[in-house]
Length: 397
Image 1 (tube, rainbow, N blue to C red):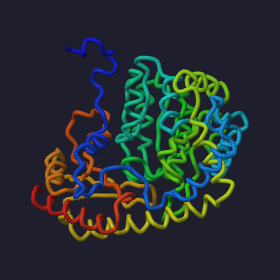
Image 2: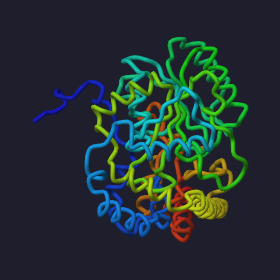
Image 3: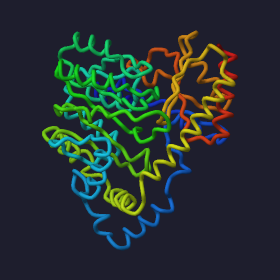
Image 4: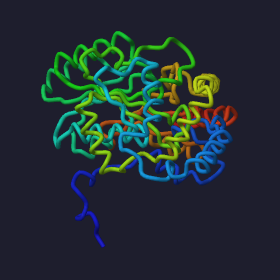
């Protein structure tokens, strides 16, 4: 039976994440994955959370297992508010909504703002999950190049000048996915200036901001906003557990109201049990000490990856920017146009990387870039995986 004719036009050309598809090919336990975006599993507070969950189900089963409010359990909203206030990202007219992962917040914000054919300005490259959300609502994606210090402001202004009907700018300014770069303070201020001048919203996605292991903190775009122009997406996935699916949106009240209505028809509410677990964990333990452990480990893993890249990658054939935090490192091979043969050959050598095309506006165009993840593999596997990649690059470049 042919099912294409039953599909909505907006999904017919959509392509799933190669990262997720790659996982299907990685059932082989010998494969070293430097492809995903998973936090380090060895850091998960499994013992603490299992005790917390057991206590909740014993003492508050009705609260944990019954329906909750769409906007979030009040104490969970307080936890999210404290995280956002820590980086000055809550305005006096803002509301906080708990999301089933920050990705849901991005998706529902897009759904609330974008009509078919509306233009949204995005970093190029950018996170595939968000790009696919925007594509779902049949928006036109306008890419702006990511430079070593973040989105090009000259290119952004030209894009705004040529597209006066653009509605929103989507940015991951801190430890950007996939490039790992951080937008400078000057560029953040300029972005707000341009957004005000051309009257567009900014959607700031900040899932990695807590994971700085070198350099100095840079204020969030939201913290610099004086007009209520920035919608801020935060996450507990990278600092506590991705499987708990907890994120939040900070948005001006009129927008938050519409996003909340959309969430009602999406999943009614974020699971109460995981909200209660997060609240109890935050109350009982020092989350900042826990985050510090994440930072220390990711700093070691990133340093290990770069040390081995310098050792094994062919000299002058691969360019990268050293990240100051986050989970990712972005590589470019200037002497070729398509990284696909490298990706396939790496898989043959039992190591997985992600081609840059997955993060492009045009997913079908060849790319000479690839993304590496250093958070989830062991130090030994990082060293061995990079060595194998280096052998492939030396052979094919």
